Image (cartoon, rainbow, N blue to C red; front, side):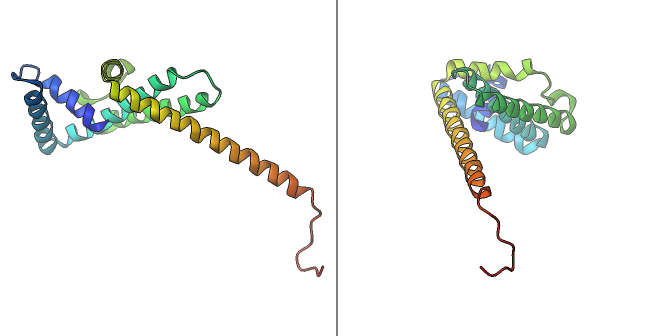
Length: 163
């Protein structure tokens, strides 16, 4: 995601660059590489931007899933993480680089979602893996509760007694 976000930002800055797509991509990569080296704020901005775009892509991917109760907590966690990243940008970056408000970044994620099939596919794979992980965690939790209940029905033996 970081690579894709950097490339999108580099291409946006180098809109006027002529040539074929490969030369535009190479030019955008060089621009981002040079700017990151010279200005640490740009490096941090791009890292935080990539994280927010990833959060937005996950939210878009979850939005494509059938409604299930497991998504409520995951959506809250992702939105909280996104808010923390935005607050970090406000605290750590100059005013021009702050990632405030949903509308500044969401169009980038939506554009990637709509135009890049690989990003969409990988996001859906990740969302499906997240769902499987959540289901597995719930199953383990349920089995541990059942085990605790079954163990609590046995009489306790005082420590130090000889039986």
